[in-house]
Amino acid sequence: MTRTPTHGGPAPLGIIGGSGLYSLFDPDASLTRVTDTPYGQATLTFGTLAGRDAVFLPRHGAGHTVPPHRINFRANVWALASVGVRAIVSTAAVGAVSPDYPIDSLALVDQYLDRTYGRADTFFDGDHVQHLPSADPFCPVLRKVAIASLGPEVRPTATVAVIQGPRFSTRAESLWFREAGAHLVNMTLYPEVPLAAELGMGTVTLVYVTDNDATPGDTVTADAVLSRLRAAQPRIIGAIESIAAAIPADYAGRELIDRAEIDLVLAGRAA
Image (cartoon, rainbow, N blue to C red; front, side, top):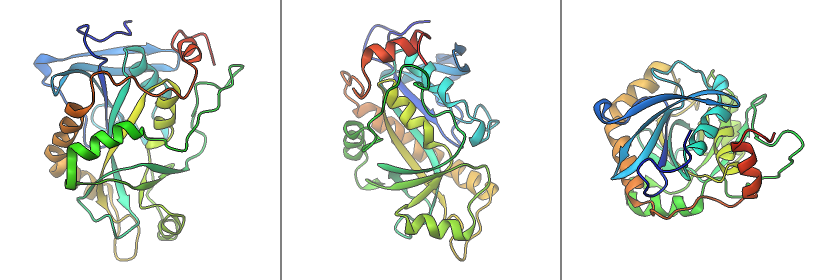
């Protein structure tokens, strides 16, 4: 398994596709392979995006076969780090609990409220104890690049409450999240984002608002969410390409955990 760029150039970009985005590259110009990790298997597809080597991973598997609470986040993140990824551009579907984020809008989230439970959320759960700084969970450098590249098409900040899933929120929960300071609701960004940071990767996440969650007057259904995502897919992919094109070739990731500890994890010798 290589941990260097595919063609010897800048580090490959990691692209994680959320609901509705299960493929990204031309099948005739890409390579898909199953990667073995200490945490299980992950499927990576290698191709190019915006003139850069890129690695694509569908968060829910091909065709949305993996529910949010069963995603193998550690395997996915480890696999991306193992092939040299330093920057991750991810997408996600979200519901809005704030009227400032209407259906069909795009946003770049900068904070999350973790409401999940029971998920394996660290690579350092044994003797190699590490405490990840999390004040700014999404990489400020990548967010700045993304905001500049997308301009007024995207809302530059948002706080997302990450719930366990796969059920949607009750109306009481939706209002509670709003009162707690959340603008949006999602089921998958935790622990994906902190796990990436533990392995030295920065994440910028583009979210698409599919519904008004369970706020009064709206009832969210999976069919409505997926239908809106299908219609918005060209727009979402275009935004991903714009962000990818703007990420500096020399972006080196985040230095939040000692590199020697990260190398131990990638060598399968730390826990």
